[in-house]
Image (cartoon, rainbow, N blue to C red; front, top):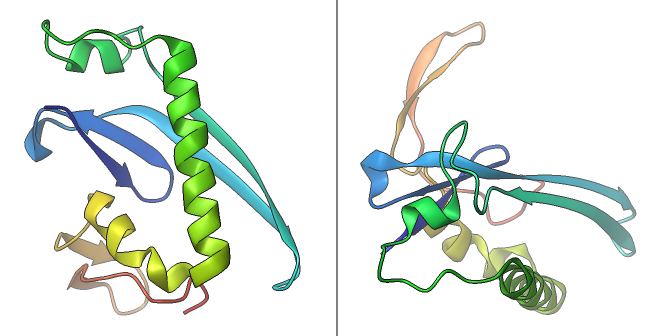
Length: 132
């Protein structure tokens, strides 16, 4: 099976396992408005069939898998985003944190924080509110 993960801040990674992950897409968002009335402009790019410069969806699928059309991939992305937005609007960010964290490649990774303290740290979890 193919695994897909999110690398902060906006990379989409794909691979057969966590060690073989490579970038094959990206997401850019711009939000504006107020807390009660906001809009988001979303840009998504996915490398479906060109294996350069890193990899693509078709290269990561097994030879036995039927390759989905670009139209089917787009339809699945739009359906997933619609479901995500419905849950976000009805239940808040807190209802999505666990699912997002499962897709986040940085969980439990050692990172170096380059500020005045220059300290090592380990990522743990995301806040229950995007403003925390």
